[in-house]
Image (cartoon, each protein chain N blue to C red):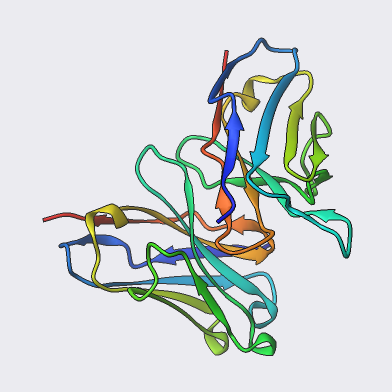
Amino acid sequence: DIVMTQSPDSLAVSLGERATINCKSSQSVLYSSNNKNYLAWYQQKPGQPPKLLIYWASTRESGVPDRFSGSGSGTDFTLTISNLQAEDVTVYYCQQYYSTPFTFGQGTRLEI
Amino acid sequence: EVQLVESGGGLVKPGGSLRLSCAASGFTFSDAWMTWVRQAPGKGLEWVGRIKNKDNGETTDYAEAVKGRFTISRDDSKDTLFLQMNSLKTEDTGVYYCVTHHGWFGPWGQGTLVTVSS
């Protein structure tokens, strides 16, 4: 199984600043035949289902503000939230869809 | 607009069974691959299993923790996804989400709560 490890577990941030969340996979999720990283990011607010933010490691889902960006390749990935807004202060998960079982990181909680 | 509405959750004793349903609308359900994801109270996300579409043989895959106990099926004539859960354990407690599967997951349903307790 591919183990996904996020860091940090929690992150104190200030409104208007930049937040950076890291995600590391135990093996590469880059598929060489199409040069795509099988990595997604989700946001989950309390009492709600997760919401897809990013797929293919860096492609923003339709409707997601451009202050959210994803980067990285192979085994190391980053979710960056620029100009942090109050509604962004919640929990974020990375997930690999390179192989079953599909696995998530443990989550990173943003705090003010 | 894509809508996924789960139902069938509730309280069940260890060793019992439960069948969850997910009614889909707003997209061509028969073309879609579908997944179940669960979340224990206060915990992270855990993939439960996936079913491919008919063109791909309705093939299923499961997490090791549920293999042999849970079964995913679909009724394309009713745009409905199912999760049959047998031999339930206390650690199966959580919110179960029905999700469209593109490799990545989304959109998600609101979830249905399953509580396994004596």
